[in-house]
Each structure stands twice: as C-alpha cells, then as structure tokens.
Amino acid sequence: MLDIRAVREDPEGVKAQLKTRGGDAFGQVDELLRCDEVRRAAETEKQKLQGDRKRISKEIGALKGKGEDTTEIEAQVREIGAQISAIGRQVEEADQKQRDLLLSIPNLPHAKCPAGADETANPEVRCWGEKPALDGEARDHVAIAGDLGLLDFEAATKISGSGFVVFRGQGAKLERALIQFMLDTHVGEHGYEEVSPPFIIQRECMIGTGQLPKFEEEAYGVLDGEMYLAPTAEVPLTNLYREMIVKAEQFPIKVAAYTPCFRTEAGAAGRDTRGIIRMHQFDKVEIVNIVHPDESFAQLETLTAEAEKILQKLGLHYRVIELCAGDLGANSTKTYDIEVWAPGQGQYLEVSSCSNFVDYQARRMGLRFKDADGKNVFCHTLNGSGTALPRLFVALLETYQQPDGSVAIPETLRGHFGADKIG
Image (cartoon, rainbow, N blue to C red; front, side, top):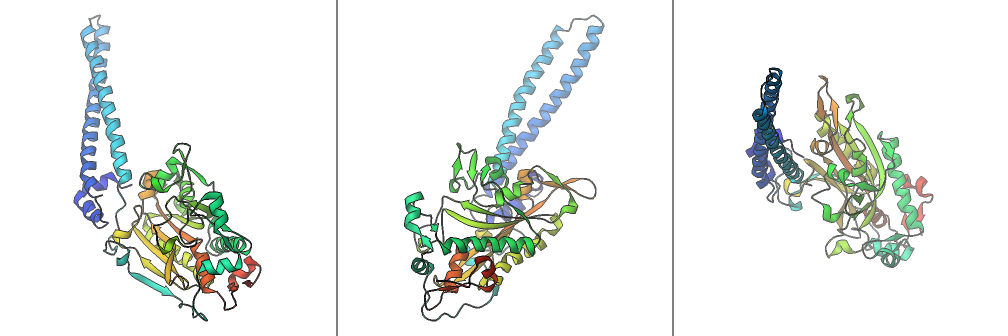
C-alpha cells in the first residue's frame, strides 16, 4: 500500500502518477484524504478528552482528600468517558475505511515508466537469439503432443473440467525435468534458497502481497474465503517474512520455489484457449528477492537476467519488454515481461514477469529492517517467474520439433530428462 504521509505531502503528484495508469484510482486519493482528516481530527479530540479526564480525576482525588462532595464532578468524568468511547468508535471506523482505501489504490509507476494505455505501447528492451529455422511448416504443440501422447485434455476434462490438462508419459517427465532444471539453476548458479511451501494460503497473506482485495474473483477460495489455493508462489515465499524485522546484512534475501498455481480466469475466447497456453492450473518456478530500498532497481535488473538465463540455457529465442503505465500490474512500480518465441503459434508468449514493488507489499505485510540509525524501515520486494510452465513447455516442443515428428531435447536439459529426444 502507499504511504499515507507521502499522499498527504503531495496529493496532486500522487494523483498525476495514478492517472498514467488509466482508470479512476486517482479519484480515491481525495476520498482517502477526507477520511484521513476525519480520523486525525477524531484522534486529536479523543486525546484531548483523555487528558481532561485524567486532569479531572486528579481533582476528584484531591477533593475527596479534603472530604468534599465529588458527585457532580464524577458525573462529568463519566460523561467524558462516554464521549471517549463514542469517538473511539469513530476512530476505529475511519481507520478501517482508510486502510480499505489504501489496500485498493494501486502502486505508483516509477518516474521513467513508459507512457501508454495498454500492451501495444510496451517498448522492447532487448532480444536474445534468433527465431528457429524449421524444416517445413511449424506445427503447434497440440499436434506435436497429440502424436507423441504427451498431453491428455479429455482425461483432464473428465476429472476437473475445461481449462486443465493431464501430462502423460514423457510429457509428465519433461514437465518434471524442466522444473528440476530451473530450480537447480537458480539455487546452484544464482544463489537462491530452495523452499517448498504450502499450496493453501491464509487470507491475510493474499492481502499482504496484493492479490486481495483486487483479484479475489480470480482466486480459488476455500473455507468461506479464509484460505486460498496459491495463485503463485510469490504469495507464500514473500509471506515467509511477514511481520518480521530482518537484518540489513541479510540483503539480498533470495528464495525460490516450485508450486502449482491456481487461477479461475483462463482467458477469453481465441487462440489462447487452444492447448495449454492459458490454464486454470499450471506449474511455475518463482524467484523472490527482499532487498534494501537503495538496491531494488539494480536488483530488478539482476533478477530479470536470472530469469532470462533459463531461456538462454535452453536455447530459446525471446524478447524482453518493459510494461507501460497502463499495462502495469496493480502492485508493481516497474515490470519487465520476458516473452519466448513459439513457432507453432507464430507469436511470443509471456513466460516471466519480473517486478519491483518497492515498499508497497512490505508496508501491507509489516516487513521491515533496521537501518544504520536503528530505525525500522520498510524493505523493498521483487519477484519474477523463473519461469512459468506450461508456456515454456509449448515453446520447447515447437522450437525443437523435428521433421520425423520427434522433439529434440536441448543439451542442457538432457541430464534432467534422461534422453536426447522424445519420440
């Protein structure tokens, strides 16, 4: 969430930054400030009344010591007490309303965030590799996997409905090999601590990383909304440090995990609904960093390079784009998307979104560190997919398809997969 003090100090500047996102979030700033003014005025009045009650209570004691009647003045204290209770309720109500507003207002785009209303305005930052030259027309992953028996949509529909898939045989093995390969790379080469977290998450953890309240309709809630299936490993990984004061010498804190991810939204009608490009359940390796505020933008470059390394090691052509203000996620101040080329789709597919949230998440979850002066300061948090499946699975099948219908396995993956080809 935003710092209410920063909003008070420069409300017009905050509104101007929010306007670059599009939508009407900037309109909530005035409502937030009105609520804050009411809350602060009520809190001031409450403190004044508490002071009056304390002063008069001392007077009662003095009067009783002299043997004087205190009936009238005691009634006055009781009246003040009733006023304090009433104002206390006003403070609590205003406090809750202010928090609700702060939870609903998105993060501020960073100063140099590209202008634009949607993804068509996202500039390309860099490109790696070349589009593969295939022998013959590129087949898509559905055809390739169908011939090789790697994916079973019919069985998944029977078990869970549309938007799910069963990986079978060498398809399941390839999925597992990719997960292990990514974890081994991030842990062994990039210095991450591997974590295996729970896949069911408490509501306050979802609020802490910003999935709630904004994206509640996209989440699978259980136990009347008190628990949720993990939409991404970002949630349990970042919440490992919720309500903690970490030591500055721990920075950068780097944790990685594999989890299945669950999202009710599986895409609108169109090409993305074919095959496994957009699913209700999918596997992902996530990387999370917790860093000193002075280092977060430099660390975003490092984290993005770490996610890119996965695609480089697999020999997959990709591009990196920076999200414009209108396409930026609600929690992020700066984001790079990594998009891998899928020949059978004839398009790039997003496999990683690497974001710097600055103190937006840390403020929601009470994640701080002690600075050199011993003051508690909010950390900065970052995360990225390192990377997401099954789009990586799609790109690999379509990039390494062979004329005889088989699929070659990249050399760097063969040790994990145990063979040099499928089929």
